[in-house]
Length: 394
Image (tube, rainbow, N blue to C red; front, side, top):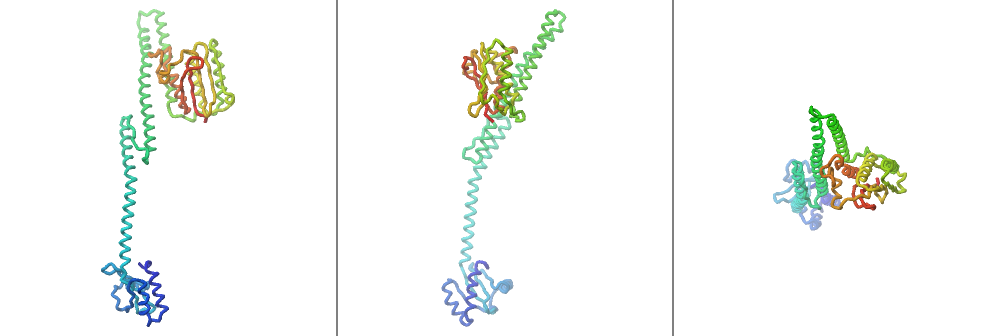
C-alpha cells in the first residue's frame, strides 16, 4: 500500500509545502475534485489509530487503515507535524484486490486445465504402453502398443513395436532353429550309437567292424561340421560387432579365391567381373565374414551348376554388390525366400549329411545383415540361380 499510494501522497505533500498553512483547506478543496475522494486535515492527537500505526506514521511519514466497509484510509504527515492529511476513504483498492484475486483464480484454472489437457492423454498412453510392455514381458509376444501417431510418445511406441517385432521374430527363429538342430543331431547320434553297439557284438566280422568304424568316423565328422555351422550362424545372428571390421582391398581377396576355384575345379568354366574402381579400392567390411559368404555361395553354385559359374563384384551407386550365378536349374520364385531359412533345403527335406544341412545360405543372409545389407536370389543370366549380396558403402 505504501508503494501504491506513495506517488499520489507525495504530490499532495509537495502541494501543501508550496502553499501557506492558512490556505491549506481551500487548496485541498480545489484539488479534491481531481481525485474523487475526500482530502481533509485533522489534528494528530485526534487520530483513532493504534500504537503500531503511530510508530509507522512517525517512521515512514504515513500509515493506512482498512475500515469495516473494506475501504482504505491513508494518513500522511504534513510539513506541520501536528496536522495530518487524511486521504479517503478510498473504495478502489478493495475492488482491485477482488479483481486481482479473480484474475489469479482464472489464471490458475486455465493453467490447470491446460496441464490436464496435455497430461491426461500422456498418462493414458503411458499406461497403455506400460500394460503392453508387462504383457510382452510375461510371454505374450504378439502384443503391440496401439498409440496414435499424434501422441507425445508415438516415437517411443513405434520403437517399442519395432523392438517387439524383432524379439518375436528372433524367439520364433530360435525355437525353429532349436527344433531343427535337435533333428539334425539325432540322426548322426543314432548312427553312432548303432555303430558302437554293433562293434561290441561277438558275431561281427572284420569287414563289418571296419564299416562300423568308418560310420563312427563319418558321424563324428558330421557332428563337428554341424556344430561349426551352428556356431557360425549364431555368431552372425548377433548385433554387428564393429571390432571385426577393417579396411581391405576386397577385390584382391576375390581374385585369390577365384584362382583357387579354377585350380580345384578345372572342369567348370569360371568367369569373374570386378568394377574398375574396386580393383584397388579399400572398403570397410568384415573380410572374414564376407569371404565366408562368398565361399558358401560358390559351394552352393558348384552343387547345382552344369558347366559355368560367374562371380561379380561391382559398385552401383551407394551400394556394393557381390553375386554368384550358375547355369543350373535355378530356383522357382515361390521357393526363393525359403532357401535363406536355416535347415531348409528344397531338394533335401530329410537333410542327409551328404547333401548338407541347409545352413550355408542362412549364414550368407546373416552376414549380409551383419553389414546392414540383404541377400536375394533371382534367375541368372546364364539360366540358373543368381545369388546377390548388397550392402551400403560406408
